[in-house]
Length: 435
Ligand code: DC
Image 1: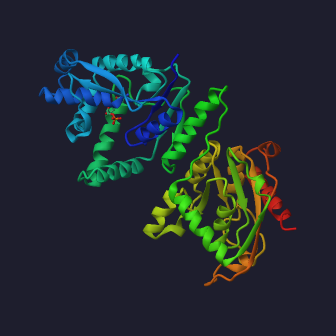
Image 2 (image 1 turned 135 degrees about the horizontal axis):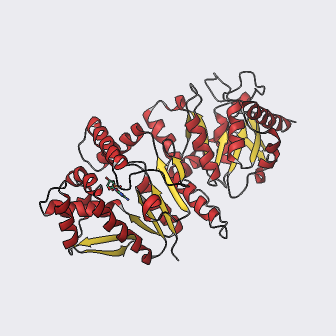
Image 3 (image 1 turned 30 degrees about the vertical axis):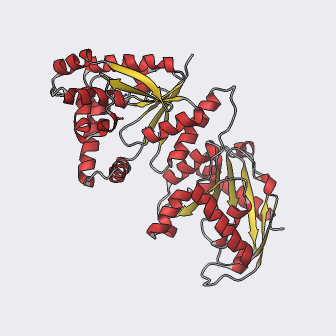
């Protein structure tokens, strides 16, 4: 029996890229259900029929021959022997497709085609109604969402990459118009399917979302308990190599207890913070894992640096407000088997002493449900403290302590006070490593 992963969501929520990636990771067949609606719209335009005239559209649909075949892990089709290809993404198709997709006879016919695709094997199918109408019985249902301004930016960026001239205002207008039609139509409107797993992708990368889905699918399958290990991007690996060479030249840094950081699965690394050198040293000592650092967004004002931070996977935090989106992104990374590193004190120490932890880290620990490795870094305060202009050569020692496991946190319960107590427990474990 085929297994179906249904991924629904509004335009530019990241469905296509994520679904392709999920299909590749699981080795399932990828189906872009929207391409069938676009294919029919393309044919309707070719036949010079109005996309508002339902009878004429149905007549085109009944007289055309759509043939499906597998190509490079995806289901594709020809219409009357022709491959519409890139024309499926043309402005004209885009302008007319929502109207065609809102016609009940069109939906009935396309849903039937989509259901029959089970014959190709296990599928990752993306669309608007896959979890609600096409395969409502599948237990693997996901709904991707993102802030509408972020979706406008994504769509605008995608158009620019395809060298399609567009004004951001026009992109916004077209996207919101399509949202309204997709959500407001009578038949199979876009909505979250009951039981679907909602993923808010605004501040998540494609890899994070895809890993999250793959892990949810694998975990649910129960008999397959493999955890996907996040692959470090090339830029991260190269940056780490360069930094490691520089650190080796400037310092003698040693680490102990590195085996406390698990080889696989989600793990939070939490360290004291005395210097800008701290993340670099942690990154270069935990060579067996790809680490995602949480860092304040004001560090990346420079455009090049901002680009770099995004591409090495830094989770930026807006410290001006309680950045719930950043915390959610970190939780998603941890739950999908990744490693996140935080500095619970929030800022570098001014006098070399440990400071109080922020409650947010307690929330992160309570919600992520992964082992937390406390870390104490000794010597970076002497080498490069806050406000220093130059780095001094100094011995640095990084100690990794025994993890705090989720079961240890159960006794604290929930709520602000509980999160603060959890954060305090973490600082106490970090302090123990000082001795
Ligand atoms: O995902 P997309 O932009 O390629 O979708 C094109 C159109 O088809 C869009 O207006 C929504 C519609 N559609 C739908 O109604 N149901 C689906 N399962 C997929 C797409």
